[in-house]
Amino acid sequence: MADLLKIEEDIVRMLKTVYDPEIPVNIYDLGLIYNVDVNEDQNVEITMTLTAPNCPAADFILEDVRLKVESIEDVKNVIVHLTFEPEWSKDMMSEEAKLELGFL
Image (cartoon, rainbow, N blue to C red; front, side, top):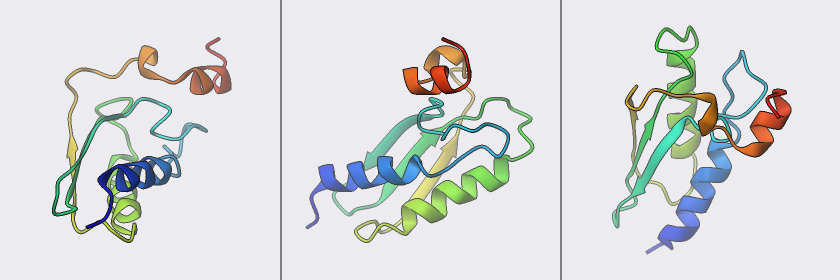
């Protein structure tokens, strides 16, 4: 069985390659990923949000997350849950994202 910690690291690395087309920062550093759960069968559930409920790129971003995480060798299935609770705010961004977007 693959090391679950390594799978989680691979997932985070992959999530950092997904971008909102309107923002030059990846979704992980934007704070859009609320939870990544990998079970012992190597199935992945991701709970995430968007910067706004009416995000025009929502379908593109969710599909990009699913496809990229599914491409990881040891991942079996990926389910992406979209939530708006709690509502996203700039406080959820990493320091790097805040710097990149001029919030620091």
